[in-house]
Amino acid sequence: MTQVSEPDKRQTVLVVDDTPINLTLMSELLKGRYRILLANSGEAALDILRHDSLPDLILLDIMMPGIGGFEACRLIKDDPRTCGIPVIFLTARVDIEDEESGFSAGAVDYITKPISPAIVLARIQTHLKLKAMNDFLADTNAYLAREVERRTREVQVIQDVTIVAMASLAETRDSDTGQHIRRTQHYVRRLAQALQPHPKFRDFLSDENIDLIYKSAPLHDIGKVGIPDRILLKPGKLTPEEFEIMKSHTVLGRDAIASAEKLLDTPSSFLRFAREIAHRHQEKWDGSGYPDGLTGDDIPVAARLMAIADVYDALISRRVYKPGFAHSEAVQRIQAERGRHFDPDMVDAFVAIAGDFLEIAQRYSDPAP
Image (cartoon, rainbow, N blue to C red; front, side, top):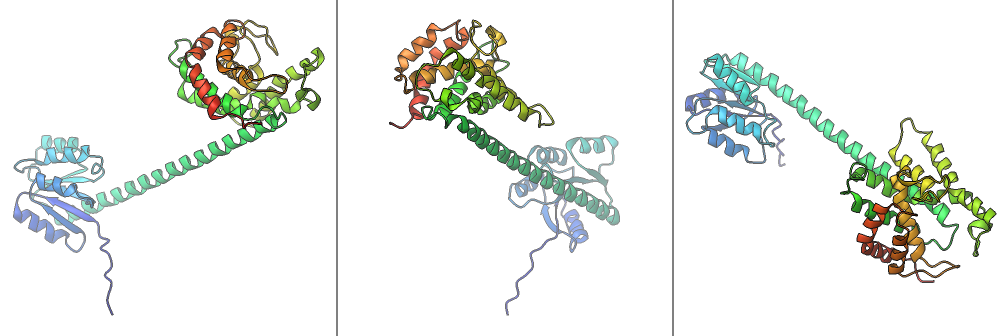
């Protein structure tokens, strides 16, 4: 019967000394307790450390030709692969200045020759235990970090899916809207990215805020779930009374999102953007919009972005009561509303990247009827 040998689970100690008798003495002292690697120079030690299997601790002489102990220790500590290996100087140099230099180079201990075998073994054992504890903590922290990242991704995915599902509740009541929420979401992000270098928006439109605005954009018409079908789905022009009811979708959307915010222990930037967009995307730069007739910079940035995205998509999209306009005509109509319906700076940015809007519209176009 073939015997399968057990893997050697002993910890490994690398002994570095240019004197053969010292290497022999340390081998005799450590054998049976640890796996032992030997190097007769700083260069040889660094070569051993380039291999995949690293020692658990290094005993390092100082006075060696070529790369001395201090330099070797600094190189070991500068390398991310080896910086966690504890280094103990084992040397005949007894000056306080040398000991200080050893600790400055990154050593965890400094033992002078002639050695006491009991003290050397005790200190090796102590530092190996400390290293094992540090490795355990590092592994635990890495695991926890991965778990936090995984669960954060899960929450984000659930959040994204929930947003689209909620938005679809409003959109599916209107058979004409198709991929409207997906297109406007991408329009908003692209327009925000184009405005990032602008001094007026640079501080607000961080990558993080743009991502939050992008994710919250589908909720801009969530309030339409509260509008009666006879008004929401009416093919012809709304009466003044019906239009007043239709306008209330902005307040209904705001109130629905505000109710969700109250369930949270801490404020949510994401829900704040969603609430601002739902409530204010029908406001106009000159104050002629609704629900409150806000003007200029009083209108939240996220809502101003959505205003352009929403109107552009409405212009190019076919409805039962109108054909879809060509891209060029939609751009001209938005330009004509510069400083009236829309933020002038945002219109300028829109015109500069109008081709990107067209590409998005084509990528997420509605299927032919």
